[in-house]
Image 1: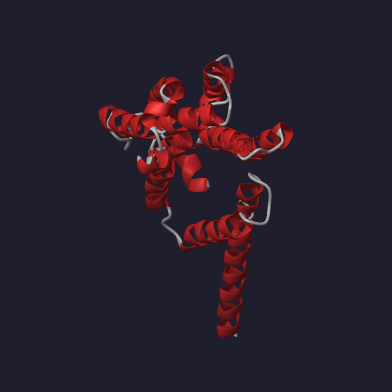
Image 2: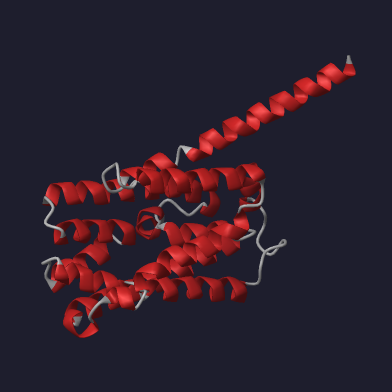
Length: 248
């Protein structure tokens, strides 16, 4: 965390990546994930929502996991309130992203309410992957704009052409988002503690998936971070104690 804070305070151009490289990577993420809007549009239409209801979800909610959770529950015949609750739990993680990005991006107060709409997995990952504040801001803006535009366009096309597109599972579009997110996250796991936290989060998320309501396993998986930090602290205390005994 201290290292990321230091990076956020680094002046633009001081060790940062070229703007063109940041834009290229951000566009790659935006296009790859934006195409999965087809899958959402088709799924939403199949769950009984109208084209306009489907498009309103993408325009106003704009967090893919929550949107899929909502329409998936509706398609399975679930209660609308229960479906909305599951989508809400999945969306809570974006609030934690916002806390981190508010420090990293340091946007003017007048801009923050509008930027909040783009605080999602992909914009957070791209922003945190940059080496300075300028790169983070460019990455956030380009990823947010390209993904928001393409996601809403493909949502519309998917909802209107649901029958023509057919089974979206065969296209593999639903896997684009997680695959891109993991590709961005993996290079950032440099220490044993970070890898331990990531591995434990995966185990918690997958293990609790059949047991808890939709969205809750994701929140519980966040407990992996304090557990990993606690384990690191215990290891450091033990090593310090051994050194003290050795000095005696």
